[in-house]
Length: 508
Ligand SMILES: Cc1cc2nc3c(=O)[nH]c(=O)nc-3n(C[C@H](O)[C@H](O)[C@H](O)COP(=O)(O)OP(=O)(O)OC[C@H]3O[C@@H](n4cnc5c(N)ncnc54)[C@H](O)[C@@H]3O)c2cc1C
Image 1 (tube, rainbow, N blue to C red):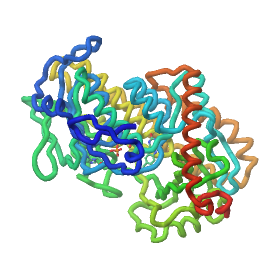
Image 2: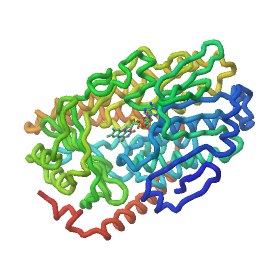
Image 3: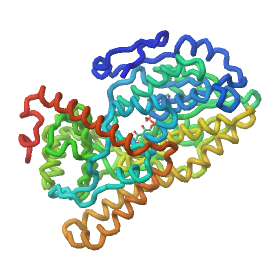
Image 4: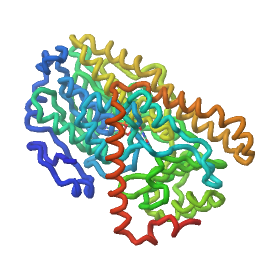
């Protein structure tokens, strides 16, 4: 994978150094800078098969997963984009995220090159088992066969597991490649630029993103892709400005989240997609990752805004003392210093919509979703795909406001439903766990219905998938990905003393 280092030329760096450093800085290419200075609405000189539409300049607040992907979708339609990202540098942050078939399907529809490179940097869910285990003994309770069965049946691109930072790097790479191509629009990415608020001039139709410090960036449209604590959202919906935690309008999910990503070799490492262990009050999710690591998340029942736990490892070992050895071993190999802790928030669906004149929201800023359903990123990608498509039909500046409303109307029902499913899963675990000691109730009353419910749930999530993939291609790609993944993990484990990372050494 190649990452751009400067804007002037598409320089590439060897993959190893990129993976090690995870520090990127993308500026606009020379072509992009000169173009973005003269942003007057004009007919797009886009590819001949593309519809002719206004050449809009779109300002995006937030260069996270949703904002970067939106820039790709928009520039491929011929628009110019300025992405304003508050952080100075992208850093390696966050572990693997699941990109389900709806997410990979959108990637493939927008750019085959991007889709290919994401697959080269991820592992497939094909031939793995995901599901729910009994936290007390590690026995499987239910398996989510639908994750692989639905794409197989409907010939959809399969779900992958990709590191957040690798995905971000693939998106940045794609932006650089598009910037070098004259037949598309351009993205200028400004790091260290925080949007504070916006103003709109009803006469000119322009929107100004006011920056923290001084200055502004003006465009035809402003998209708030600035995450769950969005400043653009706060102004648009008259919510407390920069309100976080319980001061905000977000809702606490009832859980605190602890997580780490230790290098750890288990006997079934390559056979697991992801696995949720459930038990009284808490649940614990594991997900094998690249380079021999396992991401674990401990969801601990708790109130918001509490103090950080001083020694999270000791705390968690105590909380999970009666749980299966698989759970305790994973906590044991983690170091206090590496365990992150945060309150877990989502947002209730925003039924009044997310647009205000020529300003609109996308991704977590409008529909932050529980991570347990693995859909937040996929939904942000879908938003971007739909928004770019709708804007590509705008023929007149006066149509923008209505187009943004159409986008919201198209996205509201689906995103609200998936937000609801995330919450429902969490509530279902709360109902299910007291029944665990009465195993026959689970076996005879609950289990027969669950495959049907999971099939419906995954079926709905996967129902937005604008591209297909034939089964033979999927199988051969998945098998290549698995071979690469196995080699990469085994290399990592070989270089480490087994006492530090092997399951047998840590079985508790
Ligand atoms: C623990 C966890 C696990 C998850 N697992 C999955 C998974 O498996 N699958 C999945 O699909 N999703 C998953 N998600 C959800 C997913 O991470 C989010 O839905 C996704 O990142 C949303 O993208 P976004 O661009 O809307 O927001 P973000 O990725 O949060 O990006 C927002 C960006 O805006 C920037 N920003 C903020 N304020 C400003 C400002 N005022 N001005 C300029 N820039 C600003 C931020 O620095 C950030 O870069 C998970 C989330 C969590 C917390």
